[in-house]
Image (tube, helix red, strand yellow):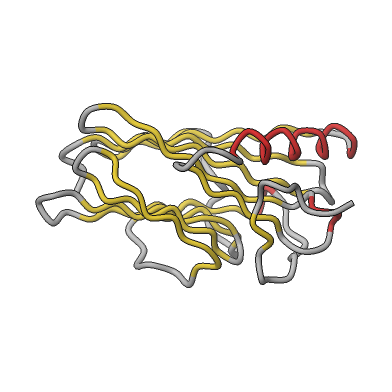
Amino acid sequence: MSAPAAALVLAAPYRDTRAADLRLSLGLAPQPALAVRALRQGTWRVELRLLGASHQVLLHDGSGAAWSETVACSPGGAALPARHAAGAYRFTSSVRHLDPPALRAAVRRLACGLAADPRALCGVYPGEDGDAVTALRLRGEDGTAVWTTWHSYPRTGEVVVTRSRLGRGAG
């Protein structure tokens, strides 16, 4: 198997990780990225960033306020929360367990679904038959940025989905 046609093959080796290794960090400086998509959502300037160990979303509003969400694999610390809220920021995460054929089908559907979306970024890590993927998609409403991310871990049969929302007044 090879990477889904809609995805960017990332120049980073696959690391044997799992959902339990993910951590949520808010307010981190920009991390080294393998791929970046710069977008606008209303007055927000948004960067969707694929990292060597997951994702980062950077947001800047017209008043100079900045915000960052980083979900990445790191040792120690609290596991990825199912829910988190801080001011105008809301975060949820869930983990689905799939057998190998179901995971492969889910990854292919995801990559194909994001192929033509200019507000999405999908990266495939080399190896693992193209089933190790991190993807992000931005959408929103007036004054609000909303994004969804997907992280697949083929060795454990896990797909982690996060949903985040940031409204005005969060900086």
